[in-house]
Length: 136
Image (cartoon, rainbow, N blue to C red):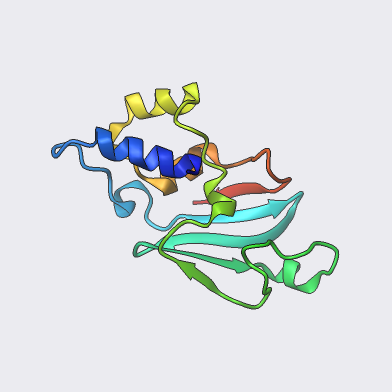
């Protein structure tokens, strides 16, 4: 079971009827994350109307040094999914991490908000050299 699935299971066990998670609109009106390698934009990740989307940036499409990400093999495709892809999901640390526990204790309404958790904890990853930057 992946860390995020364990996290979701834990969150569901903690949610009370009067402690519903914030909606996407309450947290951020139009979060758009930019995946970067050094100063170059690899692509954009977005969440809107309960759907995740990813598209490669023009710079990435026009270069041949970096290969496409495993989950997004076509540089030209516009990807959509109801679930956050594992490439991005792995950027959210385990609930066992003290910084995540501290956040959840002080922000119970953000418990199962992947957008907010990705924004707070997903900038860097030990799994790859890319940075995930939120564009406000």
